[in-house]
Image 1 (tube, rainbow, N blue to C red):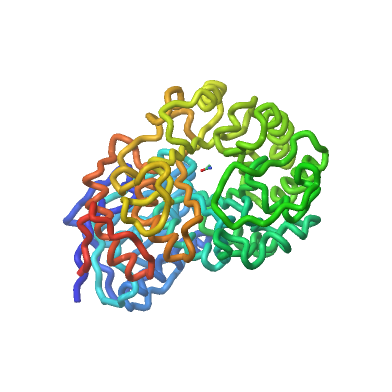
Image 2: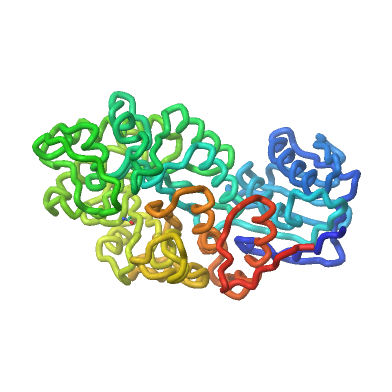
Length: 491
Ligand code: ACM
């Protein structure tokens, strides 16, 4: 069986420059080998493994002499890479391992859907030169409403990196549950991390510090930065259940497994609050090698505005004190922000004065408007999972917008990037996560990577159609949206 030849530009996110040369197709034959600089041996082995699976050939990794070459250096931008495919051989080059890893994802998509051992395959000839539009291309997983295990998170990571997503924001605490062990505060996870602590009393669990460290390292090897979030000063019922001294008047609150928001708050006028918050931020910072620490700040409806300002004015400098940049949902822009702080816009309104002011003050912004980028919104009214408070978000709606146009005063130069959050009130399993993320996360990934002028819905729709058999081969669930003319068999 001979696989259909993929076109050089059949890649998501669409590369910056694609120059096909059909006279230069490369045949992956039984004798093919991958050669790499020793510093790139890991990437070479990953590519060889993909080729072995696709072809069934031995595909050894050697230091020299292979017709597929991986070169580190000489192409001097952090995430950029270049792929040259010619009849005599294939070369992938980048200045950094991260760039090579990006190029590897592109090459992976130029192979037929993997896992089939189909013998000789042909790679389309030509040259791709590529680099991202934004440094931050993220998605968020809500572990608080329903917990997902380290293995489930790792499996999701392995799928999202294929679209060059490079930040995974973990929502680790909320009213229902607390999902990260914090040294010195054991009841957070003993009381609020166990069985029965998710929405509807399902989906409890938590990450030990060792599991979190292992997950962060796993992500780092895939060039993904983990962004931990501890949501403050609202969304704290689980913390207050575990430690009544954090509740107003020190009362013992009841655990909550419903999906209401906005009813809980730390007390901005008690020193116990700040002792707790600083301990947690210090511990999370110590466990997290990446530059960001997300402090939430959203929907603090039961925190009086003056108290909200008092609280954030004291808490916002703490990530910086422990070596991190504070990220927060954009409500935090109501107070004066430390210079490196990053507001994350999540609402559906067409303008926001606080975020516009932050951008004027030189802050970088992450754009996550719920009516475009929230992966937990239903695709249409019949979607069995998800919510619809921001409307239904079909695949075209998730693709056909631009973050530099979303808020007046927040243009291209103010953007750190885009993120697609996925809240888990209605999600119970990895298959549920995947159903909501695919194919909309690839749409957001393309918005974050591809130059704006090169993006086109019709082109995206045609390219994503080929992912049906690919996701099927990988065991990844997805929504067979009627907006896409899915290709069922690649060869
Ligand atoms: C949010 O959706 N409450 C950030």
